[in-house]
Structures are given as structure tokens and as C-alpha cells.
Length: 307
Image 1 (spheres, rainbow, N blue to C red):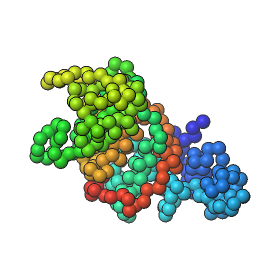
Image 2: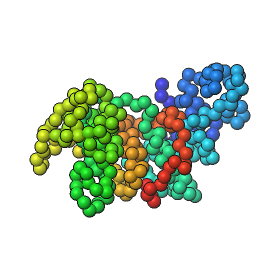
Image 3: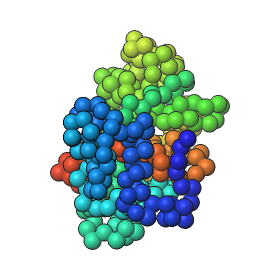
């Protein structure tokens, strides 16, 4: 049974101490009880420092080691507040907002926390899309001179996969940055996003010509589209909503090097848009945060001033 607070009052009452936060992480990471990472023994002594000492080999294990929280100098209560704030905001947050809400003296700290948590928004080994999926590309970036559409200069190309759910409904989505619209780039992204055997609908772009050879059912909706036609409505709607979200939440600022992580955050939110409780998103993000390997600050390269 999933255990999480449903309201801000419940959250504040429950996660007010470091010990409670640590115990919550333990229930998520060691759902079947403690297991020594060195010898596999399940018996331990809990130390006053919060560490578990293996009764067999004496190894001292921390619940935050090997997770997003590893080596943090800030209390877990603050991390929990950050995660609650991020997941309770329907349209997302930016680093400046995190800095103000949590009272960080450094913008850089808020920026690095937000990027670490964005990395945790992708569950390791997550399921690929299946059923009927629409596939199309869009480009992201500010207004720059040069040609438009496929191959537009100064912009980043994003492949959109949107699962059909009925006639007009959209199921789950996946968004993936690709270097270009070639068949090689598209094939590599599709392999990560979509389950083989899935029916994929596309336009007539020749970059999709190898889908059937790669084990997918492939339907070209139309070889050529005319003005006013919307031949891949799910993809176009997702592209429009993402760009509006990027503009509103981040003022359009998403550096190319970090764009994939903004796409991951949007995907995390979109695929859980029908959740009745924000607490479920809080639960999912913390659950995935203890599954994702540590992210070093030196590996986070800031490409925009405020994101």
C-alpha cells in the first residue's frame, strides 16, 4: 500500500524531523527490509547516526548512499520540502522559485537541487510505450534566422511519441532530444521509447522508413499534408503544451545541454496529470530519487542564468 500525505498540513505534521524522513526513505529503498550492500545479510544494528551496521560483516550502510541525496550537507527535511513544493505545483517551478521558498542563500544550490530532482523524474527501466503511438518531431529554441522546419538552424530537435487513448484522448508520452531527423537518429530514440510490435503512425518523412524493418507496425497517415490538416493531432498538442509550459514556467529558457531534463520533467508531470492527489507525485519522485545514482554538482553545467 502506497503511503504518502495528501495535503500540506499532513505533510508538515508528518515530516518534521530528520529521523522520520530517513525512516520513510528506508521503507522505499529497503521495502523488504535492510540488505547489506556488501554481503547481502539482512540483519543490522541501527546506529545513533542513522547508519545501519551489518551484523555479519560490520559494514555501515546509509540509506542515502548511492542515491540523489548522497553527500548532501542539507537536512532531509529540507529535501522533502523541496520535493513537496515541486510536485504540488501543477505547472512546474524554476530554480529562483525554489530559492525563495526554501530560503537558500545561493541560487546555484537551488539550481543544482532542481536539476538533480529532474534526473530522478525518469524511473530506471521504465516501460516503453505500446498500443498505437503517434510519432513526430518539433524544434525548440528562440527565434533565430535561418530556415524553418526540419533542419532549422540554432534550434534543438525533439522527437515526440504520444500514445493514443481512444479517439481524442492522449495516453502516456515520451520526449527525446535527437541530433537530427535522420533515420539513424530516429531509430535510436524510438528503440528507447517504444515497445517493438507497436503500431506507429507518422507522416511521410523518409527518416521513418526503417520502422517496419526494426520490428514495428508502421502506418503513414499521409504522404503530404496540406494547410489546415492536423494529421498527427496528439503529437502537435503535446508540442504546443510543452512549449507553452516552457515559456510560462521557465520564461522560455532551456539551454540545449540540459533540454532533455526539462523534457523529462514535463513528461513526468504530463503522464501523471490525472492523479487526484499531489501526494502521489511526491511519493513517486522520492521513490525514484532513491533508485537513481548520485549526480555530482561538477557534472551539472549551467547553461542559462535562470531556469
